[in-house]
Length: 469
Image (cartoon, rainbow, N blue to C red; front, top):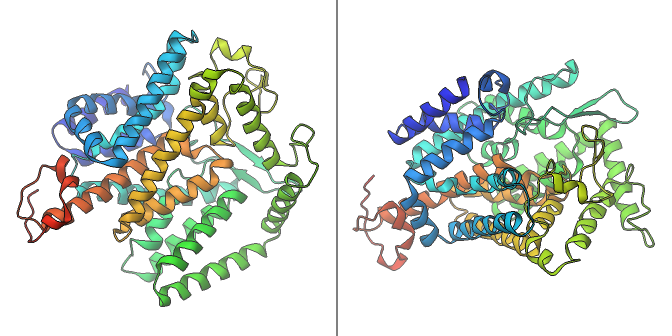
């Protein structure tokens, strides 16, 4: 009952405007106990075994209490408007799934609830921006601790962090022709936190700063996730070349070059890089067929086959273009009627997974939301990119922009784009950036503007400095 007690405490604290401890509990639920606290300890005696269910309960109660702010923000801010449109479409897809497809209500709700976390901006916007920044900083500090524990796992070959997905076991695998174990429970906020320490937060001690960066960079490399490593370094390189001053540009590029060269000299890493190059060559070789390709040695071809098989399936019916197959979960009875051949083998059910995939986010989007829902998701991500890019002079906007860029690049090799932690944190960053933008405008105007209307202030009205908080 610890979890239920923490949930009630978080709700009461938030409604009493004790935002800091309330949001710490909330993000603890979102991150599966910050990947450190055993979920079974927290959820003992609770009616559910998933911490994200407690996070959802907190979100729904506080959203209802602040529903007016939610709707005002959707009306006034472009990025929130598109988030609202996307969530509304998913809700419509849910109704289609229940009424037209006859899916079980419980299964539809399980799929739909993930998208509700995009509405977190409705409660975060009433929180002072200083508190939101403090929350992000404590998350960053916890991520450094998580990274240390993650790295310790490898030589000891034991699991020290929870899975990033609530209720899931930690996946591991041995690198071929090696005794090196790859752990897949990397710190869930590793990407934004590394950008935070690279381009925003600086310790007074340069030694501590370098140690923290070394730990985080090593954690990026340790899982030997080729697409992630490539996406991270290409994003940082492009950002440095396009945004930094000449002196910083030289320093960062030199540092990246040294790191890449040093890493490529490690046998196990160079072997993984060579495998990736061969993988791409086989995939794009003329005459190759996705049907006959050996997916065991060609993972990119597997992902393409996975996507195209789903695309071909939903285009068999006109409504598939709009809604896909609907919000169908893996454990629903109707899933047994599907006959997809490409997918990860699920030993628990003794067949290929028809819905779940840990390899490509777009397969799941197209399958469950059709082309219309997928396009709306893309528009929503574009609006987030526009927000962060337009206000890139705000430090947190840089963190948001780079994080979205990396997640989009790895979306063909993972599903982080669809995960609750990413969606919650990217909304947190968007709210911080918008509040920073609004505070800048309010400081330069004589008008006292309600927080939900700050974004409507016109630049030409802005003259002098007054701030009311």
